[in-house]
Image (cartoon, rainbow, N blue to C red; front, side, top):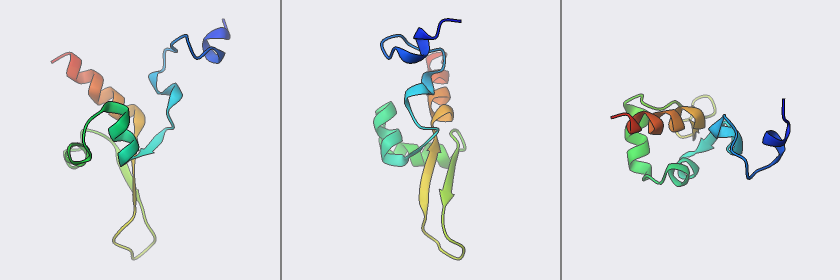
Length: 81
């Protein structure tokens, strides 16, 4: 196995999420795929991409995180349409 693929940023790895964290904020996800946050929330509500909301017990508001792999997989699925 050639380890140059893992250490050389100029060579694309098989896993497209290698340069992104596993979970990102909504604004970060928006920048990654160049779509608006409103559309991202629509995709979340339609369960087309995975997300979680981190909040304290009893709190209504929290911190939304989007699963990067599910976001990229959704975008790739649009290519086949």
